[in-house]
Image (cartoon, rainbow, N blue to C red; front, top):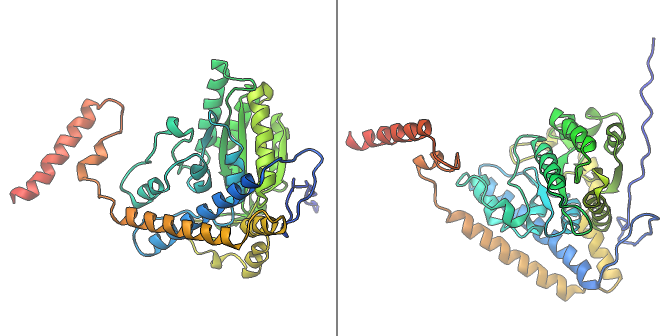
Length: 366
């Protein structure tokens, strides 16, 4: 017996800015920005891309152990992060450099993590952003639990709080993600699940992860799902703001699927040329999120060449600061790994620390 494959849904993605930089209307979503707001969004994306390029170069030169690039995903990250309010809380993966930038976290702190000289680098409560999560999908459970706490604390309403959890298309195959969907739905947790469907889970394409649009999974758990053009920073802002407002007003979770593309490698230890066609990459370059907004800024006379040149100089200065800071980061001492494991040092760990200290001293004695 021959079994026909399921029909794919043609779920339309919300779009407010075409790849050519033309503004289009959508019946349910829109943004109302001043010229300076449009310029700020472009500046955010340009600075994040410069951070990404410099960090990749540092890794290639042996100054970082690893780097996870967000090249091509700047609009999804910046648009959604700028839609957050100050009291909202983000739970990133390990490549949300655009989110940490928008939350005010110094990018040099990211380099310390990937250089291996510190364990995270910032106070999550100060910035409303958790530390990077390396375990795939674990942050969705953290976000859901945090959001359930918001509900228990009564911190809902127009001035209330919401959380947003970032993850990739590959993470949707993890049990943690689906369990978080179920908990969030049952408890009406004020959380937005923001999936950046960048086409590839390392070397596995999206159609190896799911037979239909990821956004449609939400219906099975009892909450809405929205698909958005992940290379359109305006649409990502509008959809994320809508979902966050719904969450903080007691309407429960929303799953947002931002359809974008991973222009670079999964990490600097990956070689995408082994499994990805160059023609596919070239086709997505025509949808570059920065070029699309730049075309709009020029067309609407919101920014001119002088402004773009000034921004490029600013980005270069940031890159120099990143490099100088990275190269001058002090290496941790051997005993530092015993610190910050627990809020209060335990006797067993303290005994291990002393034993290791004695072991190190034995080399000096000899």
